[in-house]
Amino acid sequence: MKETFVAPAATAARAPLPGGPLVHVQVPAQPRLRILDGASSFFGGLGFVFGNPRVWPYAAVPVLVLLTLVSGLGALGIWASWHLVSAILAGSSAWAEVGRWLLEILLGGVALLLAVLCGFAFAQPLSGAALEAISERQELALGGIKREKPRFRDNLFRSLAVNLLGLAVGLPLFALLTVVELFAPPAAVVTIPLKFILSALLLAWDLLDYPLGLRGVNVRERLRFFGRNFMPLLVFGSFGAIVLLVPGLGLLLLPFGVAGATRLVVRAERA
View 1 (cartoon, helix red, strand yellow):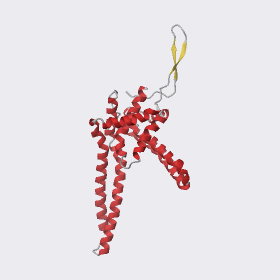
View 2 (cartoon, helix red, strand yellow):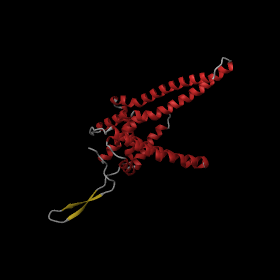
View 3 (cartoon, helix red, strand yellow):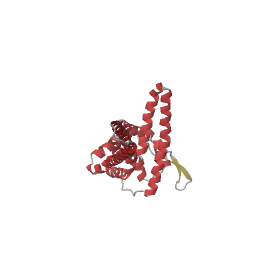
View 4 (cartoon, helix red, strand yellow):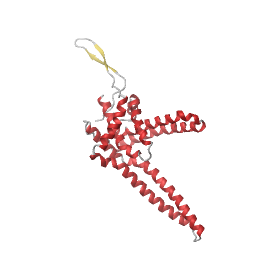
């Protein structure tokens, strides 16, 4: 059975009084999350992952996927660049040998860079099942229920719509702020904090995809939930954005970020 969030505004219902006419009864709106909930959920997710050895295999999946992609694609790229250079530069002179080595190093470096970029781009979606398992176990640890997973096709299209919406909003804004910095460098005092805030919001939007996806929540309901709990989600995403400032910690953030996002959703449901 699908679960949806209560509409943000209070609603009026008509209830009959015994022996009297119908009267309007005001139903209170769903309470919002507190700002401190964003911080406590982030660190609660961190404690849940590090304090539960049974979750560690799932938490290691994104890193293992990344290492597999980078090593496999990197080795393939270096092998292809070596054969390409050998076909382009033929000859036995000393200058030909130097040129061949320089070109192999250059193309090999480009191949490794592309392997790293592809690894980071595909590691998260390929680790989706493990991250959903972390979300499910976090909810069960909080006393929640074991949910029936949505159909793969429905979940795929919904996640695709969520990711495309985040890119459609985030990329133009990042580009606009970067252009402003280029043409007006003093504006960096404003644009850099705005970029950080934007990164925090996009990160929270991305991490919420796992607990909300298990609930079958569509994009419109996610936007309503996001707008209703804007500040707690900004605080939650800000802690994650700080972690992302350290190179290489992005995939380590995913497991406890997903657990923290699950804690936020559970708190919202119980509010």
